[in-house]
Each structure stands twice: as structure tokens, then as C-alpha cells.
Image: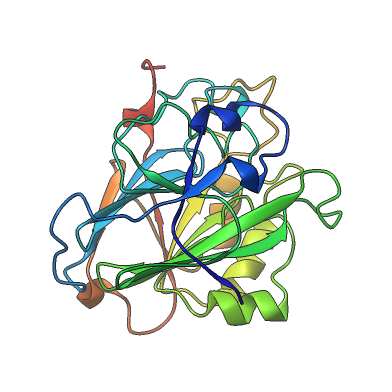
Length: 271
């Protein structure tokens, strides 16, 4: 697989257009972390900012995945305008690709490939963003990296079954973020459960389900409880806040645990 140098948009506002963003709008850039890297296995903090958007902090880096625009299923959330070293984009749909006007000078990755920055590696793995081979919503990029001693896979808006080649590239993560809310461009609860059986992660955080932030007339997702009913025999815990701290010693020795974060703090106003 071709290895790419770190890339950065020449014009971040291009993502706000509905059209496809070409490689001509990219420039190569060297990068340095905004803070001194900590020990690689000192743990990871995961903060849910709504929908499939999460902020990962550890190893001296802050990685923001899938900042969004407030529309449809994300209508009631604050825009995730947080500082980060890297921003990972799973697709250029409005709920997964709003990378414009972010604070600071983050480096933005949106294409499949392997990106190496010093001793830090991020891999993007392509899959269809729908159940019609990508003909409706194009390509989804799942992201894989290790941070704070935790192997992470963020499936983005996965909607198609995990093929053998994708399974090999994704590996067996310590932490998997898996969409569960259904609709035409994300796993439904049954498909999410199947993805867990394929990946065998140690910890699962469900994503992309209907919350109180949704404009229910414009949101085609179901609430997380539909997924939780299917996995009721597993170790399931609802976390009362939007963040969780994970260290390598926290990982279960066997099986998979499911942790559901609370996105109330991400709401633009209380509902």
C-alpha cells in the first residue's frame, strides 16, 4: 500500500461544498506535535462530541474524528470546534466531514492510506458507505491507529459487512467505535453485532444512533437501546458523562465490554 506523507488542506472551506474534493487542493506539510509526546502507553482519554465525532487524547496528541455540521441527526449539538493536532474524516457528507474553521492549524486526513509522522502512524481503510457498494453515498474511511498504548479502530459510517481484506487491515483492536443506529449509511443493530464478532475488540463504544440532539423528522437512525437489547448478555455499562479514560491495564483479558457514553454535554442547549 502506498505510504503518504502527512497532508493538509490548502483550503479547508472546500469541504463545505457538496462536490468531491480533489487532490489538487492539498499541500504537503511537515508537522510537529503541539506538546511534548508522553510515554506511549500512559493511557487514552476518549471524549464523545456527538454522532461519530470523538476527541482522543494521549501520547502527547489530540486526534479529532468526524467533526460535523448541525443538521438532521446532529441538529441539537454544538459544533465540535476543538483544538487538535490531527483531524480524521470518514466521508465528506455533512455529518462526518465539517473540517472548516477549526481552531489552530490541525492536519486533516480524509483519504485511505498509511500516514507516518515521526513514530506515529495512522491508517485509513476504505469501505462502501452504503449497502449498494458505495453507489449511493460513496466511500467510508475507517481509521486505525495506536495512542496511549491502546489500539483503536473508528469505523466511521460503515454500512457494508467487513470483508476479509478489511479485517486483515483493521486487525483486532483494543477499542472499536462502531455505528449502531441503522439508516441507509450506517450499521443497524444486527450488523453492528456482526461487526463485533468479526473484529473481536476488547472495548466497544457505540456511535451514530439517535439522541435527543436529533431533528427526528430528518434523522433516520434508531436509539442505542435497540442495539443494547441485542447485546444484553455482554458486559454493558452506560457511562454518566461524555468521557472515558482507558489504560492498557483496564482492557479485559477475555471477551468484549460495551461502554455507552453520554452526549448531554455536547448539546447546544438542554432539551
